[in-house]
Image 1 (cartoon, helix red, strand yellow):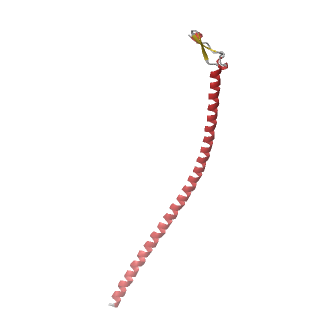
Image 2: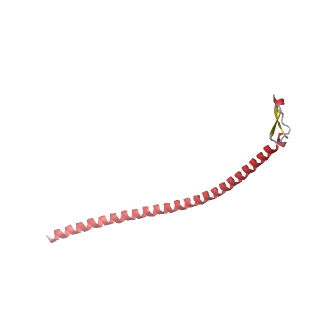
Image 3: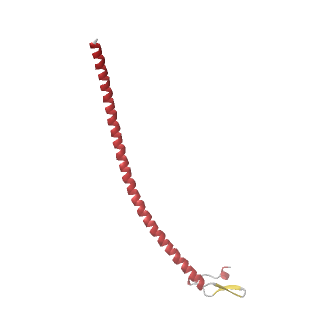
Length: 115
């Protein structure tokens, strides 16, 4: 009876030992996968941080370009306004005439010569 009980306990011990070996192996695999995921996340985070810095630089450059374009646009609008004011059409009798033709119109054919 003791030998039978001892054989059962040895069998149970062997079963538990085998289960422990499997669980340790699974834990090692799980730990390895967790380390790999963590490493991948860190790498991805570094890449995103680098990309973020690059995008911040691009935004800075684009803002500077927008400011430059706004300034150029304002200058063009001021020039156009001054040009219009200096050469605005005046109604004299039956037709519109310009007080003086803008310099950029020099050499262009008149409306009548086009017809």
